[in-house]
Image (cartoon, rainbow, N blue to C red; front, side):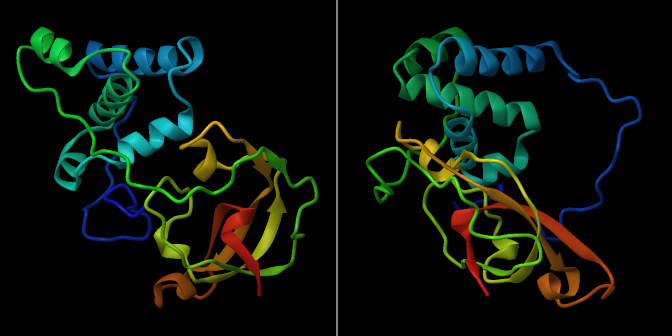
Length: 210
């Protein structure tokens, strides 16, 4: 989906600072948020990783941009556990002693397919010229905005993997190949060093032959 999380290729957010010897968690609650997410995915089977990513993407823009990484994680986990009926919002707010923010509801989505499928043969090979389909979706997508409609070249073909746009919203499964696609940086942003290129991993459904 198009949203505040899709920051690739965008400027104006300041310099990215790197903390020397940065710990995995700065606060105890951050480790608990991470553990809760792992528990919900691997043990409770409450949701899938792609469903979780979409829950984070559904955060309101102002809250997403103001929140830190583990605040976003906690919001995504809390939203899904409430939506799945695992916990109630009233109980959470009672325990928290105040308002607990949730992500926006899931948008109405077109049904992509109703049966499991697999595309065992890759459509593209290294060296093939491709174009990224310039199509937005109200649901989850792993296709960043800054490459949509752009031309690139296949450099690597990856093994079959579950298609995230389907896996995030249903129990139907589809496996397809993904690719490392190389783009000229000047083609993406109309500026920069002509010798610089960018590799982006994209699923087959995002691509068409050029």
